Image 1 (cartoon, rainbow, N blue to C red):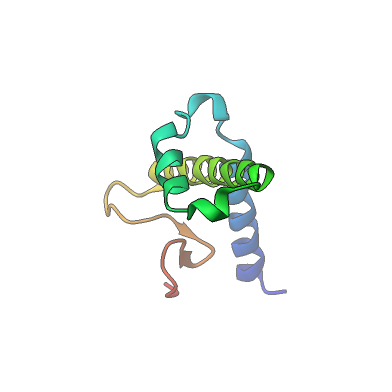
Image 2 (spheres, rainbow, N blue to C red):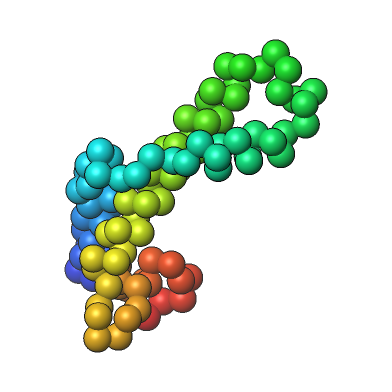
Length: 101
């Protein structure tokens, strides 16, 4: 394995670690109940009937995605370069772009 590939993998692992373990969820505002209500309002009434367990799973998934997105946004903000105001460089890629640097 080339050294730059190994470094890129290590950077991505560290970035992922910061997102998943670096910020405690108690410091993040909870998902707003009105947002959940709006999402559920988009479901046809016939799809909501007798599917309480599925809707609970859907809401849990929304909460998990929300927390992960907020944590990612915080880490991205902390890691950004204030001189250039661009996204952090992780493994030769800007994490939010598909083009290689």
